[in-house]
Image 1 (tube, rainbow, N blue to C red):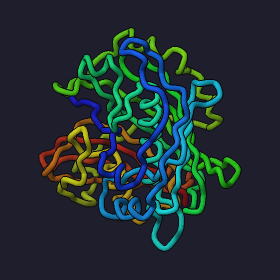
Image 2 (image 1 turned 180 degrees about the horizontal axis):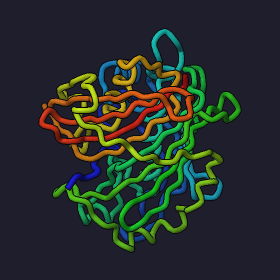
Image 3 (image 1 turned 90 degrees about the vertical axis):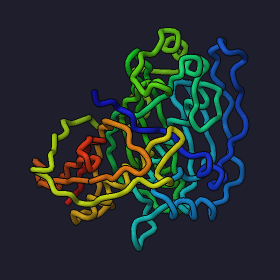
Length: 338
């Protein structure tokens, strides 16, 4: 059975290079207190040069330096602010790459759960999760993109979530604070619980779901964003798609969960889109469904199939990422304005 196991973690080495050690906030008062920290985070002074060097040397892109993190006014959302002065940009422009925007979203989810759990590690887990050897992994995420920011802008991102027994739904809004809160991107996602040792899917204990009742919501309208909708992804095969690129998984592609990091997959997908003649400043959406884990040394193929969008607005590309042996790692669809 294919399992959704794409990571939401980042490497501690990348965090140290980025100078994003976070201070402040209260931890659990006890292992069963279920009292999330409410104190705002303040980042230490950032070393943007070190962050830039790390960004350029690896496909496992670290998030930009974090300037602040705190709960929204209703405590049911969480907000972070980012410095993108030295973030990865599109060629010959100061426009921030959409890969960076996806990494901000990933980092925001981690930051929120660090606050909720009181665990400041790069793979935050509540006391219950540690007792049961559980961790979160990303199963599906759908992005919509508006106007990509420039490196002179300050980025604000907000998230809210709804815990459920089988999966956790989490939504995101990314805004350009410099441009008065103009929309940069929005996303909706599904996370699953996986046993850290057996790598099998697990069901969230009722106690774990109930403890976040005061910090979660079904009403994603509090983000003030138009969220994208998941679409039906094509079931590509080597017979109806072309191999656009191939890779061998390197040590720098592996995160703390011991498998390929989410931003590496995003790089592979968008590099394939560029190889098909698309410009990343024209990206309008990206829908990714993760199927299996991928490990060090595996040989990877990226297959694509391009077609005009049904509404005539641009181009759509179906993506299939698999091992050379044919094990499907993910399916995705990217869309680009004309």
